[in-house]
Image (cartoon, rainbow, N blue to C red; front, side, top):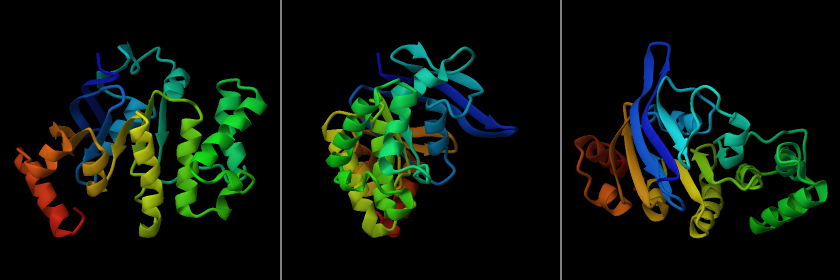
Length: 247
């Protein structure tokens, strides 16, 4: 049984269908990269997995338990499934340490000393323990995004969802964020990434899924998807990426 099972998931906004029956499994310790043109449904799929968007058809299961539809404990789901957005979403009136410890204190009921010790360990891991007392507006975009990742990790999630986490960053800051994801992948963290960083997807993913029009048109190991894509839509997408010098 896969850790995440996405079964015929449909998502609509009024009459506009964003996801048209997605089928996708994610195994424990696997890194799955979602690629495809803007508007293909990558970010929406991640938001559905985290319960931020309701679905209109199909089912999502975590460890075999349904996590979509009526009666789902969304707080419990979000303890197990962390998500990091492209816009950081740090609380501006809280220090870095307060941002990282907020959820463990309020949601997990962790003792403050334990929460702060854990937060400092995580911040040290990304080289930002010396910024614990700073406010977000005193950090670079790359530093804020690294703190956002640590904030998600402080909840000890089973799965980490990363939604275009480098798209709002200046090019010189991208590598410092991607290095953290590389380290997490090496440590066995189960992750799903929506990304436009094709070279990174090729390097870090165990499985790459090409989405187009709200459907997974092709999935497979990165060497197959990038080296020998079978679907014509995948080939056309990658040709445009290569022409733009992004692969």
